[in-house]
Length: 147
Image (cartoon, rainbow, N blue to C red; front, side, top):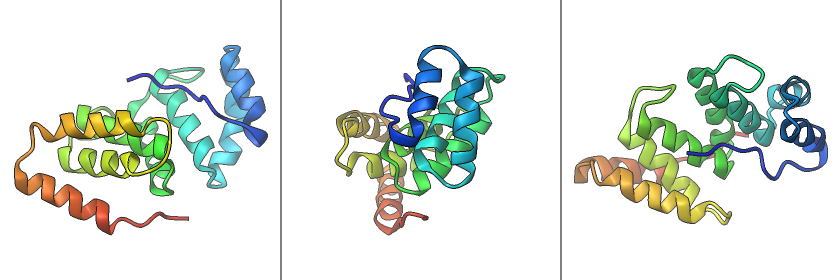
């Protein structure tokens, strides 16, 4: 999977510019306070930075923590990448049910990565039992965003 911070605008513009120019320390300075205040896009951005080891040691566990915070607020890119991390067992124990659930949630939203989310969800389902798929679908139906 490719991780990017595309689409950061407004308050995130400085972080986006710094990230694009390779100034990861500055990107971190702009993203961390926003992320700690609960900004889902900034949380996703920190996930990207940790997943790729940009200005920090690569740490998939920390990346999953930040992606989860964004995903739990309903941020589709966070849901998509978190689902992929669970599917691959990177930064978290491999869990096909959680992977399918997060990918289902990302696929259900109107965003440019929805088709990729559907394809990733369908690929993850190939190795799942009907019971596991049913459990993932139930979890997705019952899921409510945290704000």
